[in-house]
Length: 96
Image (cartoon, rainbow, N blue to C red):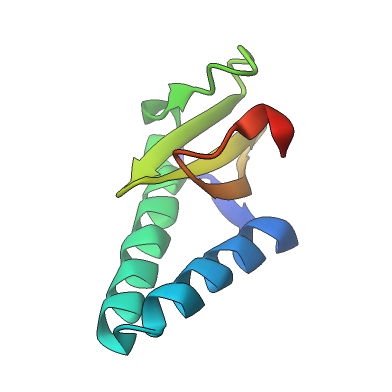
């Protein structure tokens, strides 16, 4: 069953900030990274359960994929995948 993938404003803003940071050194790599993240998010339309459960939350509906060193966190709600956060893996998620 295909799901609809929807980005939260916060998650999209986080991705834009990361892209802006990478673009300071290379606009090419920034664009490639954004494509990689967006492709990973789009893949959740058909393979939403493939991500691991976010360990800090222990909620089977909240999962994550790693894209490079970043955590793409999402919530499964009926036929929708809600991208809720995009954070560096070294950040302490509990303090966000």
